[in-house]
Length: 376
Image (tube, rainbow, N blue to C red; front, side, top):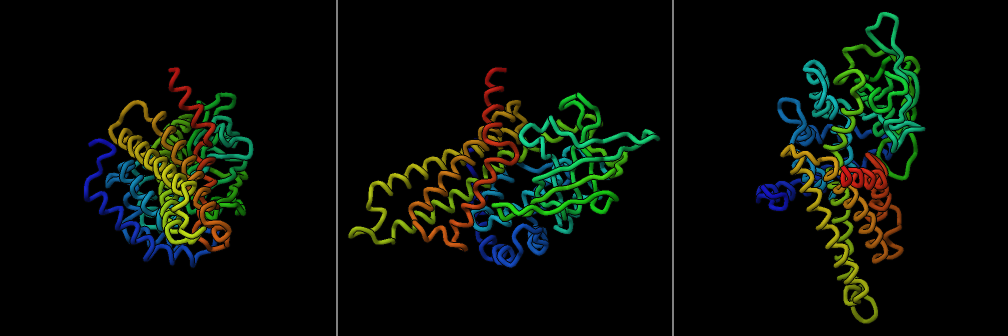
C-alpha cells in the first residue's frame, strides 16, 4: 500500500482516537501532576487497548505505521496521553526487539496493561547526542555470571519512578559502540536511585543513579556488547513516530490558528482577510502535510523491512519536529498575547513542542545521519 493512501478504516480509527483523547484522556491528564507518572492515565490507555497496539500478539513490535497514526491522533487532542503511550513503547521496545521469551512474558503484559511504567535509560550527563560515548560502568563480578552497574543516567523519561528500566551500560572499555550491553533492571534493586528533574516540557523526566546495582545474564537484552544495536533498532522504530507526535501537535496548532483568524476582528474585517496572516496559514498547512507524508513513508518502509530505515527515520523526525516548532510559533503569533496565558492550548503546545527536536537524536544528529547515508 502506498504510504500516502490510507484506508477509510484508518481515517475512521484516527478520528475515534481524537475523540477518545478529548473525551476521556484529557480530563485524566489535567487531573495529574506535571512532571510525574500519571498512573490513572496509563491505566486508561491500557483499558482502551491502546498500549496493546505497541506490540504484536507474539510480543514483537507492532506496525510502525499504526504507531504513527496512534501517536499523531492522540497528540492532537491530548499530548500527555500520547507521551505516556510513547514512553511505554520506548521503554519496553528493547524487550520486544531483543528480549527472551521469559523477559517478554514478565514485562510486556504489565506495560501494555498500564500496570507498569517503563523507561529507556540511554542518555548520560556526558553522553547525550553521542550515545556511543556512554560511560555507565558494568563491572564483572567475581563469579563471571553478573555485573555491577555504577554511574548516572539523566534526562530519562519516566525516571526515577518507573517500574522497569532498559539500561545501556559499558561492558567493554575503549570499544565505542561495540562495548555496550542492554540490561533490563526492575525498580527496587539495591543501589538503584534517582530524582525527578523540573523541565520546560511537562512530562515526567529525571535522573537514575546506580551504586553497584547487580545485574545477571538473565537481565541481558540481546547479546553482551550488542546493546548499541538494540538501542539503534529501537530508535529507528520510534523516530518516525516522534515525527507523528510532532505532526499531531502542529495540526492542533494550525487548526486553532485557522479558527482564530476566521473570527478575530481586525482592521474592519477578520484576521484571515490579511494576506500576511493567510499566507502564513497556507505555508504552515503545506509544511505539515509534507511532514505527515514523510512520516508515513518512513513508517511504511520500516514495516516493509526496507534497507534504508535509518535515513528515512531521520528525515521524518527532522522535518516533522522542525515543522511543528514553526507551526506552533506561527499560531502563537497569530493569536497574540492570549496564547501565552497559562492554560491556553498554545501555551501548552509551546512548552511541549521544543523537546522533540532534542530527544531521540537532536535535529543536528538527524542531519548527520542523513548526510552519512548519502555518502555510503
